[in-house]
Image 1 (cartoon, protein in one colour):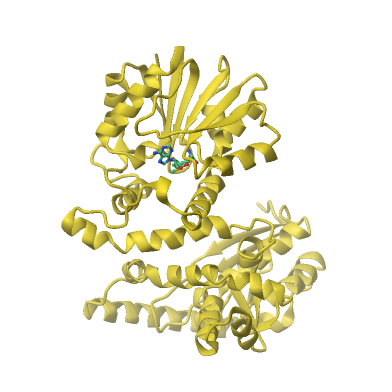
Image 2: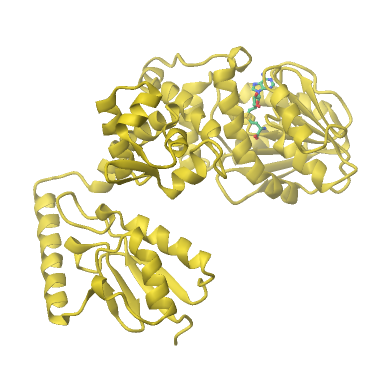
Amino acid sequence: MQPYRFHVLACDQRKPDGLGCCNGRNSSLAIDALRRELAARGMLDDVQLTVTGSLGLCERGPNWVVYPEGIWYSGVTPADVPEIVSEHFQNGRPVERLTNKDEGAVKSEIAENRNRMLTSLKAKDAAGALPDDFMDMIRGYQASRILLTAIELDVFSLIAKCGDNASAAAVATDMATDPRSTEVLLNALVALGVLIKKDRNFTNAPLASRYLAEGSKDDARNALRHNLSLWTTWSTLTERVKTGYVTAWRDMSSRNEDWTVPFIAAMHKNAAMRAPIIVRAVGTEGISKVLDVGGGSGAYSIAFAQANPKLCAEIFDLATVVPIAAKHIANAGLSDRVTVRVGDLRRDALGSGHDLILLSAICHMLGPDENLDLLRRARAALAPGGRIAIQDHVMSEDGTAPRAGALFAINMLVGTRNGSTFTNSQYRDWLISAGLKNVQHVTLPGPNDLMLASL
Ligand SMILES: C[S@@+](CC[C@H](N)C(=O)[O-])C[C@H]1O[C@@H](n2cnc3c(N)ncnc32)[C@H](O)[C@@H]1O
């Protein structure tokens, strides 16, 4: 069977430190380049790309094998990709300078590398060396800190401004930073695959060009800057566990713009993506009045209003946040049907006559008693037959899964006084105690689910 004209097996194997491997030679960059080149030339139906483990020529990677001919390419870089696609896949002429032709030599090199790998694994095991995956988790802060510092200093915008061809000295002068430290940072960003270095000059790799530079297509800098705030709060975890006291907590209403703007931008990025899923799962039939408690950027209210032209929504949030929501609403041309109200969800009454009250990413900020109180006030604000929709992590009964929810509970532990992630039974108990019925757990794609209930 040959459903494609060509099938590329592209190695992206990682091996223990000290052994050559394709991943260590930036195979993922060449693989990304192939994906983009095939898409740009409309060839995704002609060439199937499969990313694989080791092909055995580890010291010469990145390695690809192309079938049906069985052509073995070695040392493939992103710069080689257009030639491979045009010459090999379009004109049927393999790129000779990258091919291995001596089958016997290839076989013995593969066997030699396999033996070296097995010997190394045995030696590591015998020496009691920690597994690589575990060490990657332990050192996860390194890549994170490098990227966060680059985002904090806006390195990628500056490189784009220099026409995507900047020396370390030029970047340091422009940022008014220490030249030696700047070069070390830029080199590490190359190693992480977000910059490319050629002739001592740096350019943004595709990921940085698309998401990390001012004016880029999907500029995510504002949203990502929220992680700078989280770096600080997460650093208090040991203290929090030892003392139970949350040192990093501050009431959101007293947070300044530097904290609030990236926070709401981060919420908006996620909410804009999830809003259609939530609207579909909840539905809009019979709903004319929505209250979006802690509505943030307003992405969910906007999506509900767009889905049903008769629906009006009100975003209830802090004074520091509603101006941001008002801007998103105005941009969507919905200021007549989506309105904002300043209030405190911890104590204020929530109005009356709402057909739907949405609590998206709210309950995790609060403790059990606060959630029960909020749901009681929400119930009192519903119209007859009204519904409550909670979007949040819904945890296994022992609180350990899904993984994203267990880690998010730590985010709440270090950033809030009583917040956490809660189980299906906890939500069910609160909703029923608040006087609601028909409690339903709807699983959704992604880390958050829906808990639905009605009067
Ligand atoms: C995690 S965000 C969720 C935003 C939005 N619902 C979403 O899903 O994208 C929490 C929201 O609750 C708001 N908030 C926090 N404390 C509040 C309070 N005491 N009163 C009203 N809103 C509050 C925040 O400003 C923020 O918009």
